[in-house]
Length: 320
Image 1 (cartoon, rainbow, N blue to C red):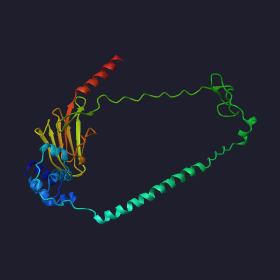
Image 2 (tube, rainbow, N blue to C red; image 1 turned 90 degrees about the vertical axis):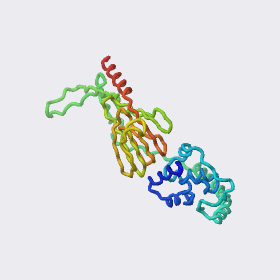
Image 3 (spheres, rainbow, N blue to C red; image 1 turned 60 degrees about the horizontal axis):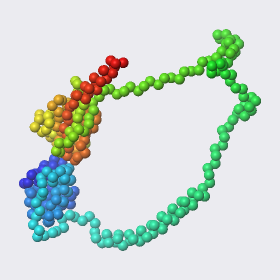
Image 4 (cartoon, one colour; image 1 turned 180 degrees about the vertical axis):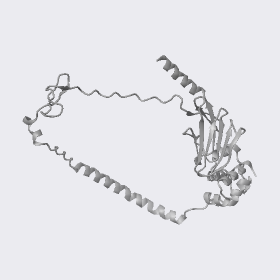
């Protein structure tokens, strides 16, 4: 068995699929799938089908086909005189396709005139449409309609409004005529507090081969939690360190509903996911992804940025 075939077989078993399942999804005959896993490319019908079948098989089991072919180099082609035969099942019949091709030009010939007539009708309707009537004025009381009955409010000196006199006999005695009410001061808007300088931030820093490296800036002494949740079947590996040679924290298949929480330390953390679309990785609630089907992510803890921001804030406070 070739290394490429072994990797495809492991991916198939991790997804819980048999060769019959892969045959149903890809429409590739089972004997060709067995030949790919065994590395016996002479069984395949032609040089074109070797790479095409490998890519189709890889996509069906959740492996990136371009990365797979790049990792294992050029795939050998079978002999030129290999007999070609139909390997992919046809989903439609030729007579039906021919009948569709016959009436398609007729349909297009009638569609364009109908569209032109519809556009002309809509344009003519918009020209004949009357302008909308203006809204009737709001009803007014008799007192508002008669200007003679409307008395303006007296204005006090300094912009205040003269308070009306209290009626005789009211509690507290009569109010002094001409007393003014001071204008109400507008409320001051308090400034929005700035975010804490000690918040944890995650940024994509660089790439090293197939690994994407993220910088995690956090204040000294704070705990950084890495949470991994699964929405489907996948293969997950988590290590303390720079690669898979570090301390193993998790190494197994994951199912929908799996949730694991790990603490990022100064030794960093390496995460490998066999099927990234079914694996969600967050650092203190911030999602982390490299956009690949099979992810290899390295989280590097960086305390220098958080300490610098904290010291700067302390110096500014002392200066004030």
